[in-house]
Image 1 (spheres, rainbow, N blue to C red):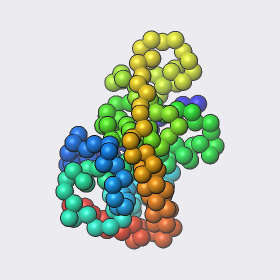
Image 2: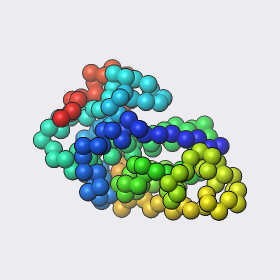
Image 3: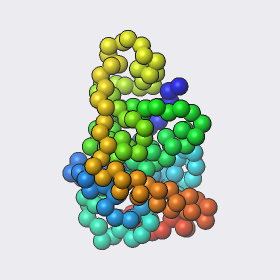
Amino acid sequence: MACEGTLNSIAAALADYPVERCVPEELASDNIYCVAEPSGLGAPYFRRDIGLRFSEPVDHLGPERMALLLQEGIIFRVARIIEDFRHELDVKSVYLAGGLSNLPCLQQGIASLVPVAYRLLQSDAGLAGVAQLASGASAVSFRRVQRLAASAVEARLRRKFEGWKLWLDGSLESGAQGLGKRGIR
């Protein structure tokens, strides 16, 4: 089985921040949690009342730190979706392609929290190509993949991911007001 998802709304949240300066070794270096979806929390929650949120005030943080928190929010959302799939399906690998998947923090962060992660090196990869790759088809153009290494801070990132899930789940149960300060600057 293959499925495809996009992070268009999340990409907009990153637009004002220097995401290219973030380094994977700085992932999970604090206990601030983030939902990085300005147009509302997407699948499977579909909550328009929950957008860009932080677990505590972030007004004192610089742009680089904000960029890292937003990327952690993205990493955790992707990892949570994959984790949910794994309850029902035998997910053996995750393929990242295009856009945000070119960011080293996202690559290594996601690779740290999923079974095996690959980055498709062609820019026009889509579900059809991933399905061919997953099925073992011999199309050479879909074989340009790079296995992603987990972050050096994998254990720390896994601990923060567990805390993020508790924060998000508790916030969803108590309503949007439980999500802390909006943190929109």
